[in-house]
Length: 156
Figure (cartoon, one colour):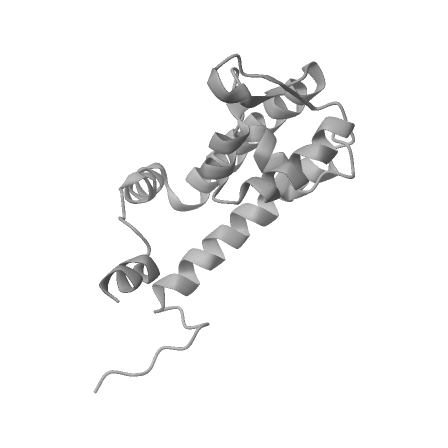
């Protein structure tokens, strides 16, 4: 007889993934406490900055990359524009698309974020070992396909 899993059971993979995410999230909170980071930025906005890259992204591509609506991206970009961390420029392509670009101040925060990510990964290697981190990375880089809800909806 198999026992019933609970949402907080260590045998529940989803629970373990959430716990790992929370560890990572709490570890990255240090970035928000850094005096060089505007204190009105949210973790979501920091994630926005971290995903822009050197060439920036179109608003629609940024929304898709972060898995949010275009409306949500506009709500997250506006405070970053007001804080002079990003600017919105014409993409130069057809249709008048707009591109979100890091400003000099935004690039400085982005460099800090990249450094923090490396520190967190080094800490994780120290805690669970290089081989396990490599295996974890390989599993997370694997295409898992669409979420189950999308599979169920498609079968509808």
